[in-house]
Image 1 (tube, one colour):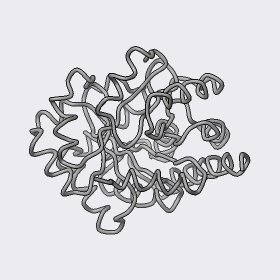
Image 2 (cartoon, helix red, strand yellow):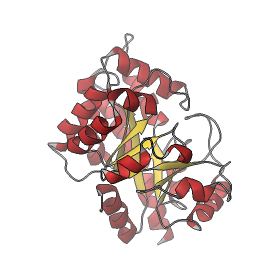
Image 3 (cartoon, rainbow, N blue to C red):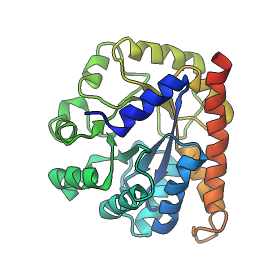
Image 4 (cartoon, helix red, strand yellow):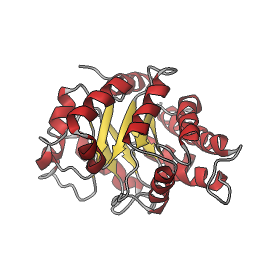
Length: 278
């Protein structure tokens, strides 16, 4: 089965450029603004949209995304609300791939079978669940694949050649390479090492490789896009969102444009990379 994610990466491969993958937390700073932001992302240059599932204990996330999750939860964010946002987005956009990203606990509490059914019905294309290793594939990964959803796995600088085939066994859609060790938003990657890592992963799989963690602006995006099939940006967008909020963390008239302006800038960097190579 070919998903929207497969189609999008295939289209971009034929165009000779990398994908821009954007991450925002669902419900941050409130559900209406969150939906407005997600609806605006494709027009700003996002090729794939990752939507965070709010969770109280996001252990792999840095301070920016942790705070976004807390704002979302305070505003009534939940798994049901996240799926409602995707459903609403799909009424206007049936082609941009949507990936839900987060942790297994909210899915487990919701019920795996129910979650997969509802996610598919809402228009979700793939999942990134950061705390489910390959040894736990029977929990969610294999059922998700059976439901027609891509299951996207993370590889890191510490994922060696012995471990990599195990990580890639049931991975689909794309591989998300975490370019630094540590939590999200922590540092800027070493681009020479990113290039080596992408080549190493591609020796084991035909899947596209998207690189994230440390992407902050057009320059960093362009540097990564020269070597990868996709560039993932999250913390920088959430920092831009946070900077637009009032003193009570409520959305203002500038919130949507604060995020989309940065997305457009970064999209320009992604597109420039392939033009420079051509």
